Image 1: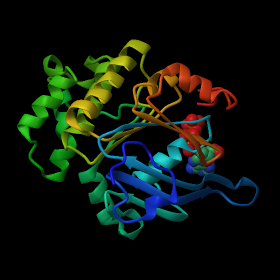
Image 2: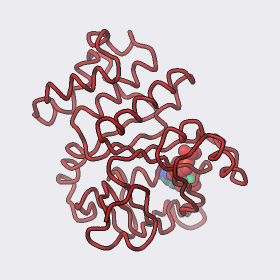
Image 3: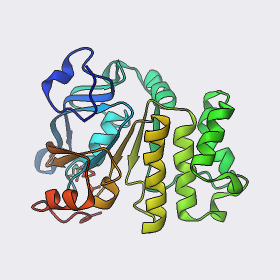
Length: 263
Ligand SMILES: Nc1ncnc2c1ncn2[C@@H]1O[C@H](COP(=O)(O)OP(=O)(O)OP(=O)(O)O)[C@@H](O)[C@H]1O
């Protein structure tokens, strides 16, 4: 069975439930206790199809970042199961989890998180260097050309524009050919032109390189770059949309809090 759209039903629990890069099965996540108790995720079931660009949208506080962090193994869950490929994260000890994140998962955050003393190229290859892996030169060349960074490889982050820095962060995430890339508001710190460049590049890496990307965003225009959008509200998935446009996403968001409010 092959899925090209996010699946949100119980069929996900079945072994071989489609070609999924990651899945969450009835996951819950609670923060705090007593009066401060917040159910950030309330039984979320979601499968991320391989080779697709999936956006996660919802109002501020709906659980988008928590879902992404839990699916990426950056945060623990209180119940349910999370799998990257066929590997169940709950069953891994810290060392194995760290290795899995390093080898199979790429991250792009709103803050670019580049090392200021390293050049663009050194930043791109840093995770591979740390892992003691040799970069695949051909792949690396392709990534560098796709993000258009070749003339800037010797520059340090403070010599690059915000958009260029985020393209370095995208190239860094892609360099190891991870099974899945999680991007949390990747264009949140960029002007609309640089944001469009980065989103176009992320989309190209899915279409042309077969990368799998999950992106959290507030922005309907950003979500329109994705193949599918998953809508979250109060820690639950409320809807999905294929072939999104900014207008359709905005229409669906009406009735939620204002997108962008609170962060
Ligand atoms: N470390 C934490 N401690 C306590 N509560 C938290 C923590 N992290 C998140 N929460 C709460 O969990 C809920 C979901 O937060 P989350 O950051 O996942 O939402 P979000 O949809 O990503 O929001 P935003 O769009 O504003 O970034 C919110 O009510 C938030 O206040």
